[in-house]
Image (cartoon, rainbow, N blue to C red; front, side):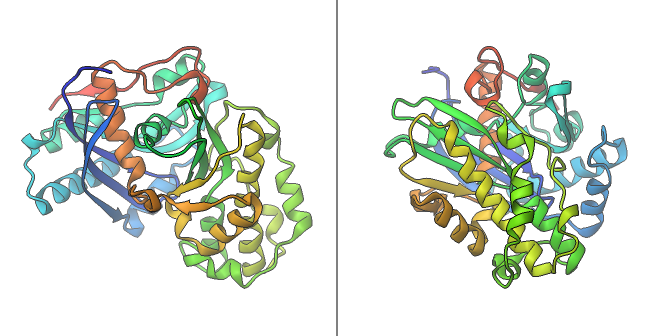
Amino acid sequence: MTGQQPLTALGLMSGTSLDGIDAAIIQTDGERVQNTGPAATVAYDSSLRKSVRSVLGTDGDADVARQLTLEHAEVVRALLTDNGYEAADIDIIGFHGHTVLHRPRAGISRQIGDGALLARQTGIPVVDDFRGRDVAAGGEGAPLAPLFHAALSGGLEKPIAVLNLGGVGNVTWIGKEGDLLAFDTGPGNALIDDWTAKTIQRPMDEDGRLALGGRVDKDILAGLLDHAYFHRSPPKSMDRDDFSFDRLLTLSPADGAATLTALTAEAVAKARVFFTAPPKRWLVCGGGRRNRTLMTALREVLRTPVEPVESVGWQGDVLEAQAFGFLAVRSLYGLPVSLPATTGVNRPLTGGRLHRP
C-alpha cells in the first residue's frame, strides 16, 4: 500500500472513436478507489471532429491541439459547475489528449493536447504525456487502463477479462492471484464507424442495426484475420489505422458492417490463446458494449458470459476517463503506470508530466 492520502482527481479521455470527451471525478490514493463521483460525456461538434480526423497519422498540429485543449477545458468547467465543485476541490487532472499516431516499434506515440494550457485554463494541476516514457523505454505505451481495472476488481471471482471496445479493442486479463496481462485485441469500433460514415453517412452503426441486416463475407473476413498483428504475441498494441476496409468496398453497406463486426468479435476470440487460464466472464466497457449485434457476436464466439461492466457496478461510459484520473494520482506519487505484463516495458515504470497552473 502507498500509505498516501487519497486525492480528488478528474480524468479526461478522448478516444480513438472520435466521438467526444469523457470526464470523470474519482477519489483515490493510486492503489485503491475510495469513491467515484460525477461524470459526463460531451460529443465533439462536427468541426472539431473533422479537425482532429485531419491530423490522424501525423505528428499533430498546434492549432488543432489548442482547439482540442480548449474544448477539454470547457468540459472540465461544465462538469465542476454542474455538480457544485470549485476548481480548488480538484487536486489533479489526468489529461490523455487524443492519439493521432501510435507506432511504438518506431518509438512513437503522439497524443495532441497541451497540458500546460489546460492547467492555466482550469487553475488545476495537470498530468499529461502518460505514454511517452514507456515508449522511450521500449514499451508499447498501451494499454494503460489495466492497473485501474485491477484496482476495481477486488471481490470479483477470477480469472476475468475486461474488454474495452473503443476505436481499438483492448483486453485486461486478471488472474486468481491478481496477475495481469494486457494488450490490444485488434479493431474495435473505428473501422465500423469509418465504414458507416463512408457508405451511409452516419457516424456509427447505432445499436448494430446495419450489421444485423447484413451477411458476413467469410472469405473477406478470413483475409482480414490473416493480418500479421494477430500472429504476434503480447505485448502488442496497434494504431486505429493499422487495418483498412478497402477489400470490403464491393460489399453492400449492411454486408460490410456485418463483416467488420464479425472481425472485431473474432479478433477478441483470438486473444484467448495468450491467457494462461480461461476467464470466467468477460466484462465489456467502451461504446462497443452498446452495439447489440457486436455483443451477440462476442457471446457466440467466446461461449463464456459476456456482460457490460455495469453488471458489476462499474461506469462503462467513463471508465477510461476514471483510469486517467487514477493514473494521474499514481504519477504524482511516483507509482508505476505501466508494467512488463501490460506494455512490455522492461520494468515497472511511472510516467506522466506535471504542469502547474
